[in-house]
Structure formats: C-alpha cells, structure tokens
Length: 427
Image 1: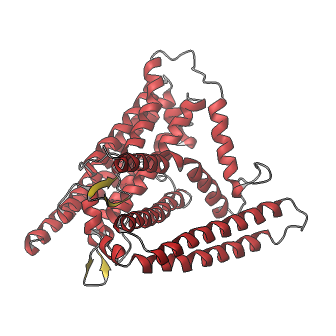
Image 2: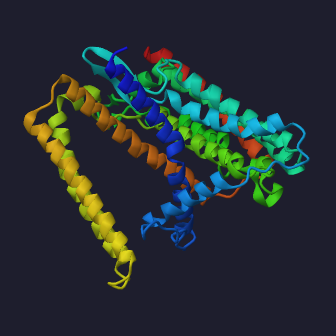
Image 3: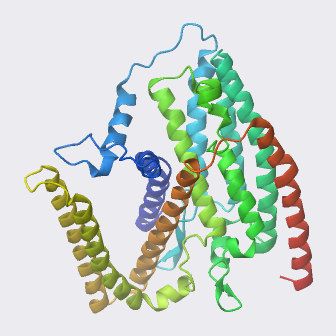
C-alpha cells in the first residue's frame, strides 16, 4: 500500500470521526444557544478558560468532562447487567458507523491511482446507511428493557414502534432516488447531482425528487428521535424514557449517539438531496479546469468574511466597559480570525502564482469540496435544531397516523410516478 493511500485512509477516518463524534460539543452548544435565541434569552455563557468563553462553547465541553468523571453507578435492581451495559454502546456504534460511507469529496486521483473519499471504501452506499440506522433501535430497546423500569420500558417500546413505522417510509422514499440515479453508490448519486436540467436548475435530489426529499427528511427526524418525534424520551410523560436509569458516561453515550445520528442524518440528506460536495453549476471537472479562479474568489472572500466577523463582534461587545475582561476575548477572537484568513489567503495566492501540478489541482479540488460539504452539513444540522425549538411533540396516535396513513402511501405513489417517468423518458 502506497504512502498516499495510507494518508488518505487516515484522513477519511478522521473526517468521519469528526463529523459524527467531534461535532457533538458544537451541536450541544448550538442546541442551547438557538434555544436561548428563540426564547429571548442569552443561553449558557458563563464557563470560561482563561477568560475565553467562545460564546458558551466552553460550557458544553465542561458538561462533557463532567459526564466523563462522574461515578458510573449501576442500580441494584438491574438483573441483565450485560444488556444494560452494551445498550448505549450499540446506539453509539451504529450512529458512528452510518457516517462511514458518506463521500466527503469526489474520488481523489494521486499519481493515476483513484481513492474514494469516505471512511469505508464500499459501494453499498445507501444500503449501509439504512442497515445501521435500523440497528441502532436495538440499543434503545435493550436499554429500556434491561433497566427494569416502567418508564424505560415504555420508552423502548415507543422507540421500536416508531422506527418500524418510519423506516418503512424512509426505505420506500429511497427507492425513488435509486430509480432516478440508477445506483446505490452515494458517490455516483452526488456526481449525477453535478449536472443541471433546463440548463439552469442544479440536478439536486431536492429538485429532482421533492416529494422523496420531504418524506426522507421527516422520517430522518423520526429515526433520530428528534422533536416532534421524541416520544421515546418524552420528559413530560415518561421522565427520560429509555435512559432513565443511566448515568455518567453510559448516559453520555446515549446522548453522543443521538447527536451522532443527527449528524449522520444531516450528512445523508446533504448527500442525497443537496448535491453533497458539489458546488452549484460547477462539477469536479469544472473546478479543476478553473482552480485558479476559484482560489482567487476565496482569496477575495476571506478578508470580507473576517471584516464582517469583526464588525459583528464589535457590535455585540460595544456595551462593555473598556476595562472589562471580556474585551480581551473579543480582541483575541478578532485577531485570530484575521490571522487565519490572511494566512490562508497568502497560501492560496502563492499557489496561484507558482501554479499547481496535476496532483496539486486534484488535492485542492478535494479540499474545496470538503469545505462545501461542511457548509451544507452545518446548515442541515441547524435545521434539526431549528425544528426542535419550533414544533410541538406529536401525540402517539398522530405519530403513527402520519407514518402509516400519510408517508407510506405518498412514498408508494412517488415510486409509481417516478417509474412511469423513467420508463417514458428512458432515463
């Protein structure tokens, strides 16, 4: 195995780990800050390290460390301790594995050798995602059952019924996507979304299959037990549901698993319906052909971004006294942002002047595509949080009615319509 292959494998695994687990503190921070914004309050902003609060991000990291060092307590009434112990691990592992087949960029060619930009180089694609997304519910069921707590058992039963109901609709919605793109390989689907139809509209799944996109996004919320489908852990009804009897890092694994599942769902939605790593109207070949123009555009945008960031920070800190220690944090963040922007712009300018070889162009294209994927991923993650603080929880009968009487019939209808169009047009 070549050195390039080893390096790319390590990078892909690290990217999958960062997107699934590494983003958890950021998602928790967003959850709290967005909640504060929507409820007209500040949100967590007190914890700091040397006066640096990062807008409350340090609070999320402090809470994570608290869970790590808390006592790992097992209630005395637990009989099936093995099941009780492995339940959170199953939830966490399945959520983590779903991210392993997400393509972060197009296939990277180094010295004539092509490498898939995903943690596990398999063509199973969407089938892998559906398999592990379905397996994660077993951890929830085992957690509720082995807790020997009526609230935990109710949460496990609710979760299993919900996943069965909505996974059927999710799988049916995926069939329409498979008919449209003719492949289960996620990278093939993203490559197809680099085209346009009518010469203007990107061939994103959102535009090609709007009904499938709506159904898949709704079922993704249900699969991840996010509001308004969070009846498995409805605090006002069954305390905390399936993890009522869990504490310390066992509880933490459930929480990390939930956010990892949310991240994986965001990533798969971006991949299937938002063009993945593709820039609108610019496929991989277009970026490679115009790499200098793309880098010049980034060089122009970076200082503008730093300027508006500094302006926004000054606006939010202008009420502080000049001697307030929080001014120190503002100055550090502004200078850090400017320094980062200038360094990246200088490196890109050097590449524009000196030129990039074939391998350099391919690597630069991959980096740009990863950055595009990150931007879309963060947007979709924000939508998950936005919906949580906007919609109310469904009643159980409403949830089941939506799944069986609305989403599944619509999915079947969409398959029929898609099949007719594919046969009629021959593509």
